Length: 260
Length: 192
Image 1 (cartoon, rainbow over the protein chains, first blue to last red):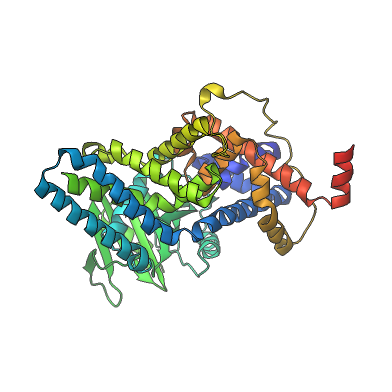
Image 2 (cartoon, rainbow over the protein chains, first blue to last red):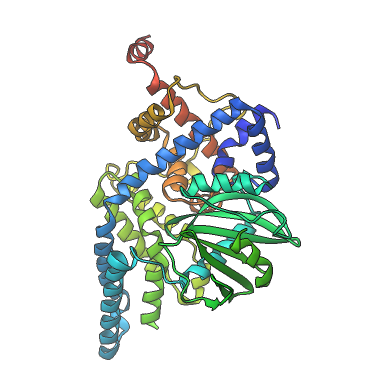
């Protein structure tokens, strides 16, 4: 890939919107070309600061979301009122009150606490379907687990360990940052027996695994969830949650989440 | 049926409220108007929400409604909306920059100074973009929408979003390069 082509694709690459083959080519060019690597770093930093600047407007909005939900629920009642009987209106009011209380809990308490794991694996499955449909784009294209681990550690701000190539019977393709709901995470893309696998890594204070099926396995154990033809296998270690998602059964995914 | 529909709708919108607020603030002039825009958009979404079609709703649908409401407000009260969304029929095709040309060069500065400079100037640089380019950046960066979702919101092909985004980020870079020039040189350039 020439420098001129890198310039054409760089923004899409940094936005994780390039397909895997182009991403790999571009990443290889950046490894060889200091000038293009510098441009990439400038654009990456610019984007980060832009996200931060726009996000600062959201920091002050936290409590107004409760007010928004209350006002919204009042407005939503108007849609049904003309057609409801008195008992139904009463039931609707009770439900709206429940929603307001649940919203208050969610915004002031539940949102700061751990995410219910009933939502966590289902979100991973939904995100995985989207990831596969988009052609499995990555931001860092590399088959070297040490290199990817270092990059992931930069993204999450803490040490990340991926299993060695010998432990995984498949190919490491690369990684990209992602979000689970509003929480930052990273996604590592693998291919095992020709089947895509996503390993999502996030901080363990944001989610818990209690609602998933726990499988005792030595000292640590792991968790399993199955839904819509997908399997999620998860493990908590070193203040991180490692969760692998695929249409494969749980055994090949276990090696990914347990690491070395 | 009203109870589960309301609860499902609230569950659907909750993860997107924050992002909708951030994007809405780029469409309107004040915080309270941003709240109004989000609220009106969500009420409109609720009126269209159907449990039978629940699986088809994606977050791009919410942002499409947000944009449509902002556009309607613009048409009825031009001072209210500052980021003017352009319906496709009104877009003029501008000659595109050569995507292979080098990026505008910024004055050399160390990493921490560069971050400070960006924190100081990035919003101003964003606001200097033409509306159709600013909108693409806002939806993608502030709204965290993928290019495909941005295309859905704007009603244009993904390729158009990609080229507009590239153009927007280049222009942003040019604006930052201008901000980074020493004041005397900038004044002299404007006086010529």
